[in-house]
Amino acid sequence: MKPLRSDSDTYRKLNILSVAALLAGAAILFLGCKKNNLEEIKAFYSTENLPKLEELDFETLYTDSGQVRFFLKAPKMLQYESDNGDYFEFPEGLELINYDSNKRVVSSITANYARQYLSDKKWEAKNNVIATNARGDTLKTELLYWEEKKELIYTNEFVKIIRADQIITGIGMTSNKNMENWKINNPKGI
Image 1 (cartoon, rainbow, N blue to C red):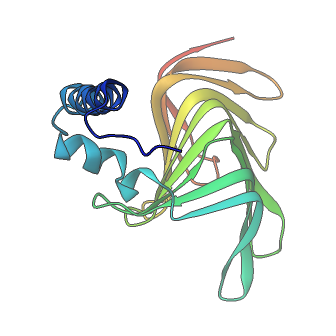
Image 2: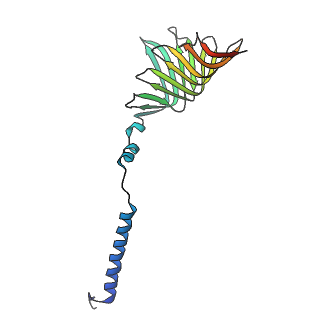
Image 3: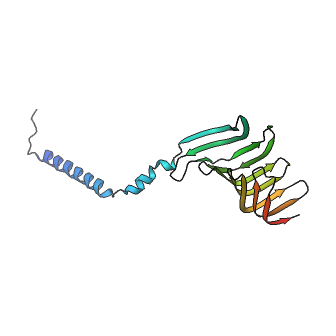
């Protein structure tokens, strides 16, 4: 068997073809790349967009001085930490029941979406919000806020309050946390 000579035409053509393919591949790689935007990369990998905690089939009791005050149930709860303040998000809705000191239901609320702002002690409920008080009055709206410190519930959206003897509608409403003393800003009623 004869060894291949370095000056053979086949060997030389193969070498040239290999180098050409290598240079073409390198050119495609370098020309196909664009300069990365560092801000876009930071935004994509930002931990502010990701929850710190995720809970499924979440249930909890809030207590005060050993007394059960609230029961909270949600299919999904997400906890976020942010420069603007930490919050819990309930993207698939929630049910919140408020109890008095004798463990009687004072009020309840359901919504298809909710958020609890921890530092402000404020709740926001959206989409098919239904709140009921101990007398059986039912409030229906699309957006409702509850400020725990002020013990105030309010909205500037359309509301419908259904009572045993009447239905009242209007735009905007304020009430105490138990929904016993409510006032509709622009009422209409039957």
